[in-house]
Image (tube, rainbow, N blue to C red; front, side):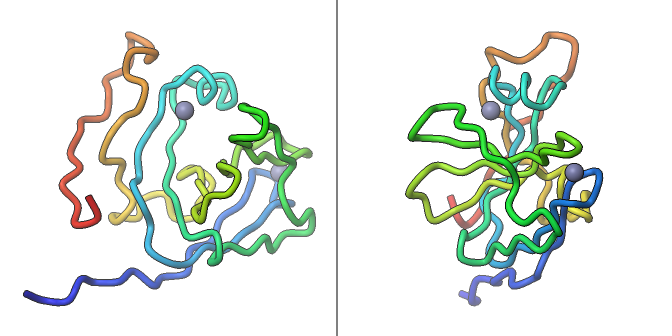
Length: 141
Ligand SMILES: [Zn+2]
Ligand SMILES: [Zn+2]
């Protein structure tokens, strides 16, 4: 058995206007898309795409600092967006050790390590767009 490859790459991202910028490092977890009603409304589109990183590897580096947070489930889940341009950039479950990052907020949106492996809330998905297949067979499980 070979050692699992640890992804230590530092990834950069931000919002459309650039006031929110961030870096994330550490192992990416579960890239996926989500078609839940919250994601659709917040995206202004039929899906949002997500990947999680260790919270301790996250740094807000833009002039606006942290995004503006909106509790979609008060006390449980909050979503971060740029107050200037409205871009969704992050989601956080209070108390979690991971931070959810919108794949579309990352500068490299074609990172082969971050291809979505599944789609959440399929029953809420629009009918006019093909769904992302469940291909998750990762070593993380
Ligand atoms: Zn912005
Ligand atoms: Zn969702």
